[in-house]
Image (tube, rainbow, N blue to C red):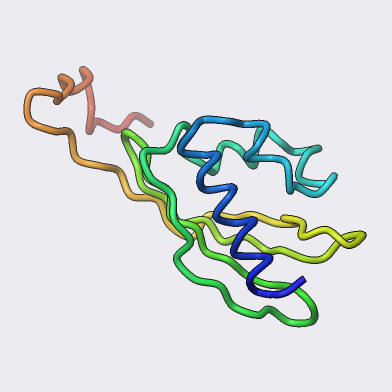
Length: 122
């Protein structure tokens, strides 16, 4: 596994997220990530309007850290992923949020503010 392999797999995940193809999104997930699939997929705005590889860094040991930027209808997120060689296959072994930004509603798309918004209760 080299940086090019990791880039290709990360870009394939991005393309699958934009296509809304969950089977392709998870094809490189480790068994551990598949056991927590709901939690992992909740990190991603699906379907995504756009998804890109922001950066790839060689991690400690034999792995790589890849930061993905995904933009959905209401939010943009940066997700840090870790990739390692597992049984000769480039595998996504970890994913976590780096940032989440709410998108501003476009003119005419604004939803009315919920009643009581901004109030706190004890």
